[in-house]
Length: 223
Picture 1 (cartoon, one colour):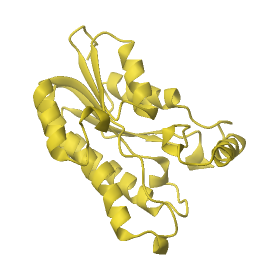
Picture 2: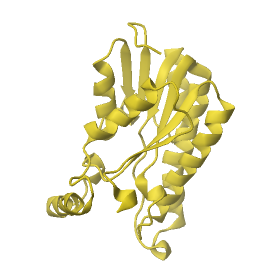
Picture 3: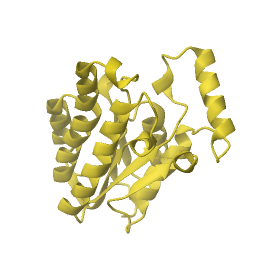
């Protein structure tokens, strides 16, 4: 689908980090971009807010979901089940709440692109919650690509990216983490939001891509 002046793209989670980079890249094209999050009253953990948002918008062309990246970390026995369930309610069930509304709203030729993360397929101790919910998103997206066809459904799976998701880390610890990535990843650096944004554009632009997981992780999966 070529971008026209009436093309409407939606980025849920588009006010910060990777989502904001996606929204900025889309704004360089013809059409309108709605970048929203909780501050705009769209909380993917609250399906009613998602339904109300899409009802106000009407038909759309492209929907991207980047919200809900936070999850409790730590050893399996140390993570309280309630915290794990809360993370699932936001990212996994929230993404599906958006998908449900998007399936009704997206015009023919449009796309739905979800977000997972490289720990879905790379074993990293202390990340079982993220691993589980990201793997679940990837599995369900493939089912959606069949059930919702010809609507194209894909997933972008980022690696370590310097975003506000790490804002609660001490500055020294964050810098050390990013430096380790740059020193050990085959790509020779950590990810930046604008790097990851290009993968969403690929999923949107290529009419022969659906049911795919697009890895943008600097080589972490082969490291």
